[in-house]
Length: 125
Image (spheres, rainbow, N blue to C red):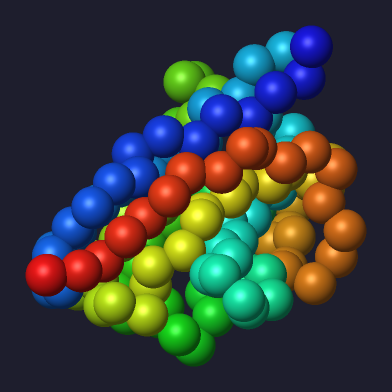
């Protein structure tokens, strides 16, 4: 069964950090570009970062550029999102998604093939 599972969410104070993980099972993540998305209550889903299958190309939304960093370890079939300098407006459910694409960044606008169930991130004092 093809599955993506996010973890690492939680409650953090403004200015704090969290690292989210996206672990794949049932398929080899190394052939897939990965995107991270988030959705806050009452808002549309927002694409925030993506990484190519090799890890050589990354993209970020302006809202997180300079604060978040995406990386991957294909040997562990896992992608990470390091989130620093968190703000209350970063509060959302965070999802990872995979798309079969080799050699280039997947971008944040294309349809993705597989989605995780999401992990809640709450930034509050």
